[in-house]
Image 1 (cartoon, helix red, strand yellow):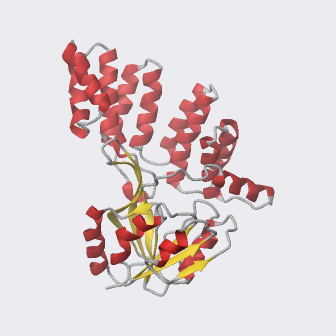
Image 2 (image 1 turned 45 degrees about the vertical axis):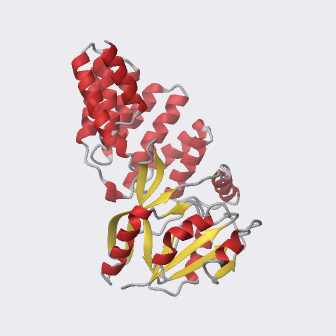
Length: 355
């Protein structure tokens, strides 16, 4: 059975750290904590779980800090988690079983990362991340922000999930500041960094600047296909905020040139036509979303609701607008089968029952 070093970088995480370590400490063979400047009880809490605690000066570079934590590891594989991540109790047996059965020629284990949840606590936004990485210098982090270890060697995908459950908001401007500092210092942004820089600008409402970054990224020959497709979605929303509706639609349709339609983009296109009163066209795209393959192992962001619940709910709206109450009710019931607790489904149900 392989051994695993849990390698973490932390700063002022007294609220989260014990919860994180409690969820996984009994499943890993070594815990490495690299502190980047805590002023609270983080290091004291860490000392209850491990003596391998190191200080590292923060230099606005997540990869440098994560590589420092990996350099301290002595086990077969390095595993990373953030302090506000947990391994849910329901996933712990699977984690151990995977560890016991892992083929020794595996280089990287990709695990699901659930980062957003619906009202019932079910994942509503997830994607795969490298989680166990063979401990050798071949595998190291790159990128000052939104760091990544490029997939290489024998990669195994596992449905075991790490859940990101933060209880306090962190500095929302940190990532944008790091990117802007890199630009001011003349450091070039590679394609992946351009994509994430565009997203940071979007989150901050700098839509015109975000469009410029996304357009440059989309015209580049570099970059992951999944990032290109997702950039089309975010860039289109920037155009909508700027009142450029035709540019928004063209950008959404542009995503179809990269690969088979993703349900997420089909829902975006359907929403565009629904909001413009073109219900028949919207119906086409929402039905396309229902038939789109879910490419979870592509490392792209996945919105599970876009593959069933959202198109069912929106088809209900479209058919109701067209006066076909029977079909509208049928699709609302299908949405309810996906999420019987959904307030939207329950509201629609009361509406139909009152007719």
